[in-house]
Image 1 (cartoon, rainbow, N blue to C red):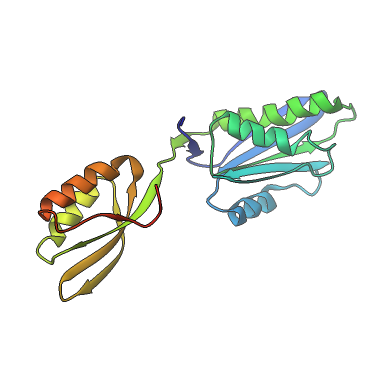
Image 2: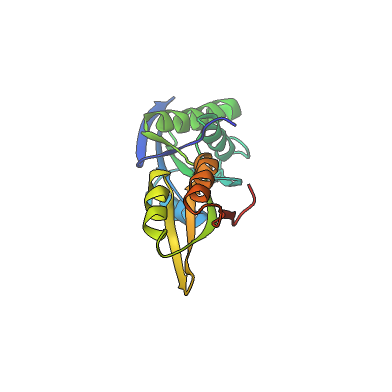
Length: 199
């Protein structure tokens, strides 16, 4: 699977196409609510159209906001996918300049503005993370935590009982096998990394 990216920070791009002004805003988002809040903040009520799309994993939505169906929101979504972006929202605001662009012209204008905006943004690779649980004795706990950090894992929750600690962790999927081997070695086979979600 090819690498996916998100944006490090919001970015914007302006363009004038046959007298219509276009302003694209893009931002990293972690949920549909985040995306909708971003659109609400940056939409301009004085503009002719505020068209948008977002992609968050398998979840996506787009809106033509009065433009002919399929000429605005879908091209914005295609620009997001075409730039290998995920967890990203893009809004393209249009002020109509009096010249009709036609369906093909609208698709190129909205998709092109969205793609140019995403190209301007500073992109960071998305790391696929999985959740797991592991148990260890109190004596092993400091060693375990040091090894978790060195493999890019973070402790989400800790539970203690008379036998030791049970850790809920998040770990980059690419580091999972190496971490399993390290923890098994540290505990001489007593501790096993159990995945909470299927790989």
